[in-house]
Length: 114
Image 1 (spheres, helix red, strand yellow):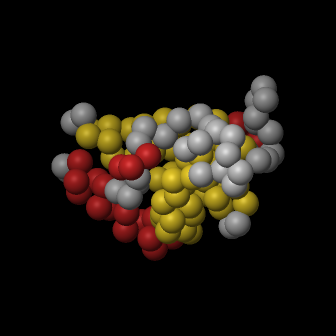
Image 2: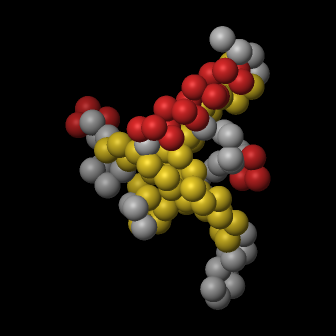
């Protein structure tokens, strides 16, 4: 499979079985209201962590979020401190793991807290 086929398959799976979220980056740290760059309507798979994944500072308020890179170009790479809004609740990106095939980003997994 080519990277574009892998991305297309992931996009279809997330549209069919996922939910839509907002990916957010605060662009100015201290103004009021804080200025953001938002990407709305991003298909995602969001799930609670399994018991065996709850170690160290990671607790039951954390979730794993799987995203396609398709809509995220303006914010890539995602970094610690970026946000996702899941079911109306803003959550903090703590870790990001990119997956590449033939040097092309095809999938992003986040650990989010809050």
